[in-house]
Image (tube, rainbow, N blue to C red):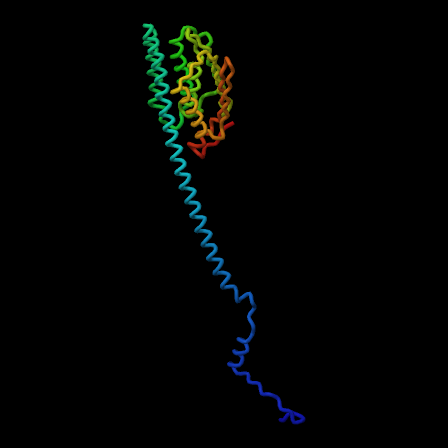
Length: 274
């Protein structure tokens, strides 16, 4: 059959090859062209971030370990500095008794031996029971009383529950040593008042002494106080408040300590009790 009016129409071939060519000639959406590149860049970016975070974490961990080791070394040094300081003062007390040929020398030696036993077998631990630390302080006070002529104004009062509470060993003794050192006059009369109050996990420690001895010891006078300040900053950085007040006649130490702070450091799983 011929087309009307002598018109010729183009022939259309529907072979498989022509169909395939027509399909491939269709434009693909722009999105699909960039999908492979996008995923490649995303994978590279994620890998880079993971690597950076991993290196940062390792670096922080190394810094924490180094800081912990430095703090531990410094703390051990400060502890070792405290023990000889105490020993010199105690031996001076016994020497004073021996010089007077006092019959109290044997009692003083027994008290000192109990204190030395505590220092040798307890203070190497990171923490000690508050109860034992207070017993040690009481023994020190008794040792000082033996060498003094007038002990009417020496008091220690402890209020609250001391059981199952932990504290850094030898933490408070330097304040008490200074109180006796500067609170005793040349006649052997001392005015030293110590009050320890425990409420929950809070320790309220107060020492008050008259300033009877104004003579400064350039070698040892600063050792005790600087030592304890450093130890407080290391162990109770945000868990203590220390106030030192001096007038012409009186010197007062007031320390408020959060006892559970040291337990949290020793055992992160520890849950404070109210």
